[in-house]
Length: 95
View 1 (tube, one colour):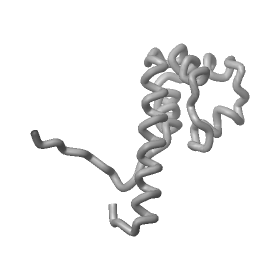
View 2 (cartoon, one colour):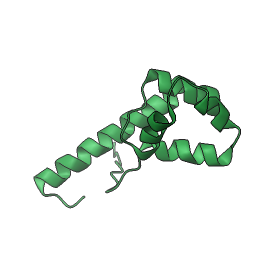
View 3 (cartoon, rainbow, N blue to C red):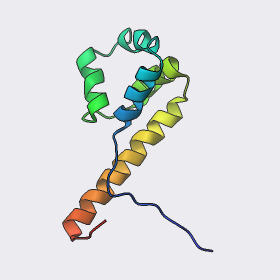
View 4 (cartoon, helix red, strand yellow):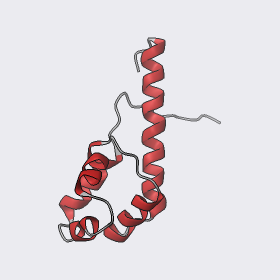
């Protein structure tokens, strides 16, 4: 069986998806800002310096209707891609 594996040479943080959702549905911002996370914590999620953990995923689920599992997988995929890209750079590969 032939397997195709797509390995892009760049990756966007899950916060990009959060930002897209916020832009698409301005009412969702109320739910996000009313959570127990501060605006600076949300900003760090959006810019990719803070991971989306279970609690954040549940708040995003309530805000946008996508399952918490989606957000956790989005974070895991981002982490794996970042790791792969940094390994490629260390190994000197041109990914």
